[in-house]
Amino acid sequence: MRQRAARDQKRLDSGAVSSPKDLENLQKEIASLAKRQGDLEDVVLEVMERRESAQERVAELTERVGSVQSKIDDATGRRDAATSEFDSEAANITKERALVAGSIPADLLALYDKVRAKQGGVGAAKLHQRRCEGCRLELDITEVNDIKAASPDKVVRCENCSRILVRTSESGL
Image (cartoon, rainbow, N blue to C red; front, side, top):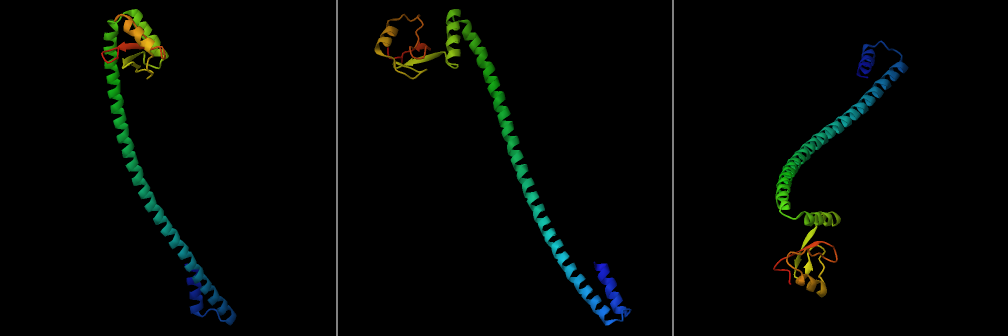
């Protein structure tokens, strides 16, 4: 457009166009080209401003992504460390359980494992102040009297949840 406007202006200035009507048309065309060029330059400026704004937004979002990624990396590291610690602790507890299980009679251990599988992982519960800590229900008086009368070697179970009851000095017997 600039080249065309410059060419038309050169023709106008050179005096090559002698007809008044052609001169008038040439002047209108030069004015029209100048207006159109101004409009296009405004559009280009607007696009450049929008591009600059978009680039700033991209930079901001890239920074935020980096920040979030560092937080994710930190959390992943903590999770992996905790998982490793839990695995180590589980291995130690499994070893300890194997040692203790070796000293328990096989029939009692089989009963415990059966009850544990049925009760979601807890096969024995403490009897605390006449209450089964497994199901949290208080035993009725006849059940408490039966447990009092039972020998210390006898395996007693909760009538409500079927867990093996562990009697202690806090059992309330």
